[in-house]
Image (cartoon, rainbow, N blue to C red; front, top):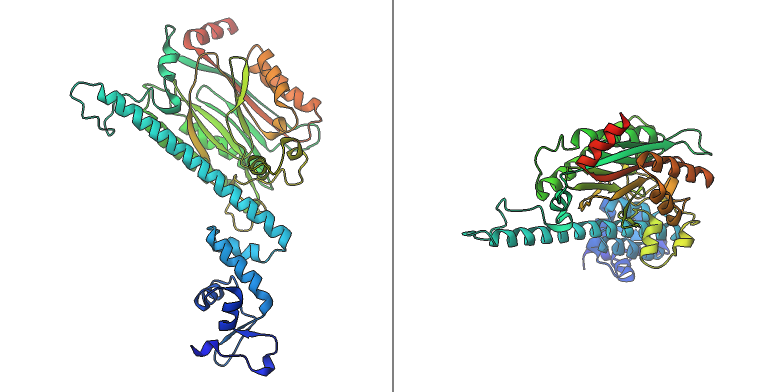
Length: 420
């Protein structure tokens, strides 16, 4: 046995050697020394002469907690914070961490499944070409792959290319005195962002502004699905950088940030960029579908069955985000990851899309949202109706919404001529 495992002298009283503590905690002495070096679990006493480590037996539970947290992959810096919390607060932090892991895993799974579908469809298309080797590295047909399958051909069926007609509106609400929400609607970009913290207004504006140069130009020629996914990833990274720069001068930059839900139009597909608890809905065939998943603690609790949707509405931690665009996160009060989800969305003529911040979705139920979206003659009327609903519900938060109709290009030109 190495000398560091010797028993403590009588004067040391309740403390035990590292060897004895290793047996108590069921960890190795090597692991305990490593935890000490990383600052995760300090000995109760270090002999100033020989450097031997001595522990209080009461530290055994904390040592096991550190080991468990390492087993679930929690970053070392975060383990240190969790270990310093009381049991209740530590439980909340662990739940938030794991919900974020599951959300990120689900996003990667969705992308993996999309790529499987995309490459399988591309392989089938190549197999139909005489002389083809079936290689998925070819630039064969990608227009009918994955979730975007058939979008371009459907949009052109007998009536020309698709276009979008859109409108956006923000409102301070009834209670707040400042507006940290932002919204934008243009021929290539639809976006809403809900800022929070000292630099919330700057963060939401910066996130949307960063998307504008990336809105894929004039759409001269349909890009492949792979090109669109790459462009979406670049766009998401640009928004993340823009927010970090926008809040860098704040006293606590990691406490300021924004959600972001945006759709970029290519002329045949919509690319979705999403992070936080702002939402995107699709009205198709008279039915309203939510096509984003909230990155929030209460949503993760709904997902695992520990909380009902009714309970979530009044949960004390309903504002806790698992993912958002923030400044340099070191000691933020929310559990965040800075990478938005990205994917492609199938579009059909007649679709109506709604993007909104939680200032609308948290106070107006989906039945009323659907009724307002269905009843509106066009996007401009729709956003006015929706903001009005939020104010009628008490308007406790800022509101941002954007609405877009997918139309055949000739119909869009006719509409513009009528407006002139």
